[in-house]
Amino acid sequence: MTSMELRLRMHEELNESLGVRIKGRAGTGDTIVGVCYRPPDKEDWADEALYRRTGAASHSQALVLMRDANHPDICWRDSTAGHKQSRTFLECVDDNFLLQVTEEPRRRGAMLDLVLTSKEGLVGNVKLKGSFGCSDHEMVEFKILTQGSEEGKQQDHCPGLQESSLWPLQGPAW
Image (cartoon, rainbow, N blue to C red; front, side, top):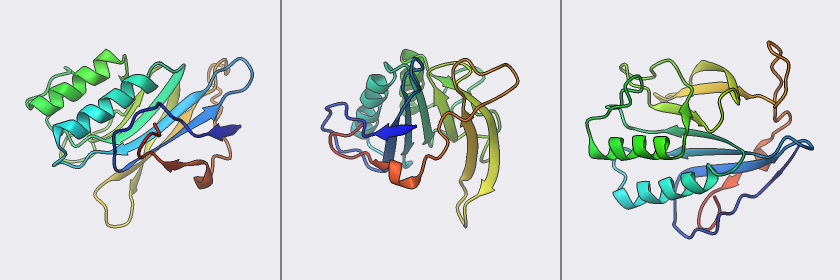
């Protein structure tokens, strides 16, 4: 496995995001993995910048996007939301054909810590691992599955991915 910096030639400043492109084995294609945090008081322009980046990244063969959405009013079962910002986020998810794969609510019945993917079956074994320190956020563990893995035998798509493989996604990156 090798990783490389992902650049989409965009110049918006986007805080609190991180990403990596994982080079796939011959014939399997690359996987883009992104992590972002959306503070509850984020401005519309910051959301729009993130949605443009999500749209560009979703054109890759495989995308896994983890984010603390801070949209507690979203009902994932019905794909509905009460607030305009939440509805716009749902539109981004729908427009980019992303699937939300976390199943358990995180805080007060709301699913805030999300794992989104562009391909069904790309992510498996999603587990809650408790909170990190004093944070009210849950650690979410999952596996990125290889293409063509035998049914019932899940393989880790990115063994050995280390912290040094990740970089801040500010300026033109991601």
